[in-house]
Length: 288
Image (cartoon, rainbow, N blue to C red; front, side, top):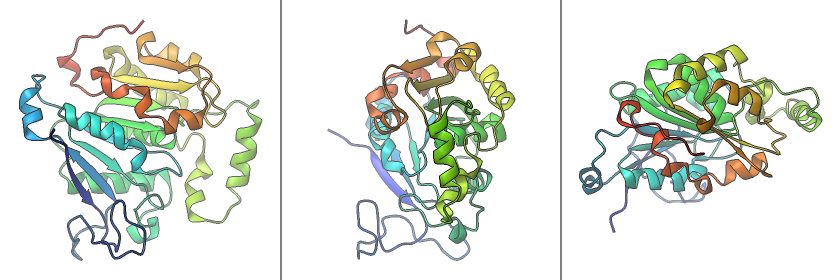
């Protein structure tokens, strides 16, 4: 059985994927010279050539998978492996202060959503993913909000958008657990908490989200999965079902934010070609 090909990129470190920090394990990615920009830690899962030839689905979209706050790229690893076996090249990213990525200070970035997007664009340009075929982008929680921000910044680069328990919409006043936790988090003087000072919208507005949904939704190019008992980022089911076709919105019954973001492979989204294929190569069909 052939497996996908993995390549690792990032700032030169003394550890690699699967190694403890501070260990003597060699860095598995290319050495970065002083003239090259420092990058997020990132892993590319590339489909083996026989898989590309065996699947008769035309050109494959490249896929970018973005994790949430206090997660890392391994939260998407099983999904990435499944997609690469189907013929996709898949990029997994560790945000600054997460996983194996350095701090935002080391990267010369602001510890803010816009600063993180700047770093993502540097990485995509370094990999030459900033041109050519558009991308299928997916994100959970904070990664969902950053996915939408990227779709606003570079609309021509996003052909498919998949959001799981996404941030980005205002929280209702009755969500006391969210307001209590967010207030406490904003008081902690650690850099990793700086980015959540703009939670829950992270710079988005309902009109921004609506514009993305109206652009991608009619062709079935936007997919949203929300959790019924989500008190971190409430599901906003009425908003999503008004903006998107019913087949594009899934409400996970009796599930929480934590469950949705830690069981990404269990959602079986990698089995839905509508989330990852070229829009003009697929016929829309209802899941009802």
